[in-house]
Amino acid sequence: MRNGATILAPAGLRLSAWEKTFFRDADPWGFILFARNVDTPDQLRSLTAELRDSVGRDAPIMIDQEGGRVQRLREPHWAEYWPPLDQADRAQDPAKSFYMRARLIAAELRDVGIDTNCGPTCDIASDETHPFLQNRCMGRNPETVTENARAVADGYLAGGVLPIIKHMPGHGRTTVDSHLNLPTANAELLEASAWDFAPFRALNDLPMGMSAHMVFPEAGELPATQNPALIEMIRVDIGFDGLLMTDDISMEALSGSIAERAEVSIAAGCDVALHCNGDENEMIAVAAAAGKMTDAAQSRADRALTWRKDPDHIDISALKADLAAQLG
Image 1: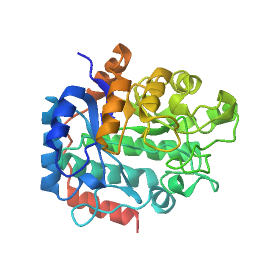
Image 2: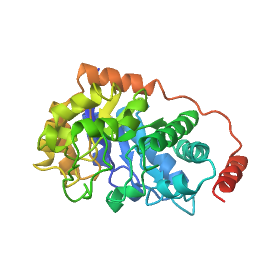
Image 3: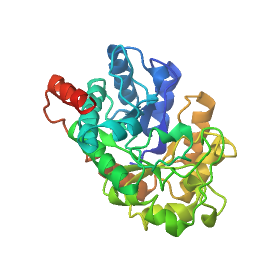
């Protein structure tokens, strides 16, 4: 049986009666949480259990816990982490420090029932990269980003958390916030393939990836999320055969109704549509437009979940001390 080709988000701290019924009927492949869904560890454990109960299976539940500005779990219950680019610049051994950080984040997530994280961010920072993204990157060249991103992915996986590499095929050249407008990368695709695509190509064995809402003009006016030519480059040039989800289709980089955004993204080759704002009417429209996963998408989704393992054992206190020493 195929799941709905969506990843959806609840509106609040607990599921409403309407959400329980809707999620049961729509059967989204997975769920995503935001700060509006987070209060205490016990509350979050109850919410993740409710989400899985609503679809009657061990559905993946994800979050954006990058550290720095993009971090949904915060003090006083959870640790605060540096912006990734700051850590890449200042750690004694950046890759080692990123593994430690990812392993600690994974422990925090698994403790509250979250088993998937939207990261590592494999975009390459430059002086021109828009501030919404720049300090979320893990380096300023393909080699550094690749090394640090692989360490993050390995740390998540060791902690029983699935990584999602983002934003494919590479968002680092853009100077506009895709939450508000559609960014354009002023680069030829041959150049982008050698630079922007390189970290994704190096991590193309990982189980899941997220598309970028941005344009490479040589490939046409459509953003990568909705551009069949760029989706094909993700599959062929980058060589990624994992589950490909959209970035949030609520973002203003995309145009058209919310249903049209979902439909066009799936038709272009994304496996699932990610919808994040929790709006009831929008979720109804997205679920109807996205429909059920294709056979190929369901196969990728099922394969991704085989990467979900029990965490290895770690000494949390010792690892925190080692990370603190790395960061001086």
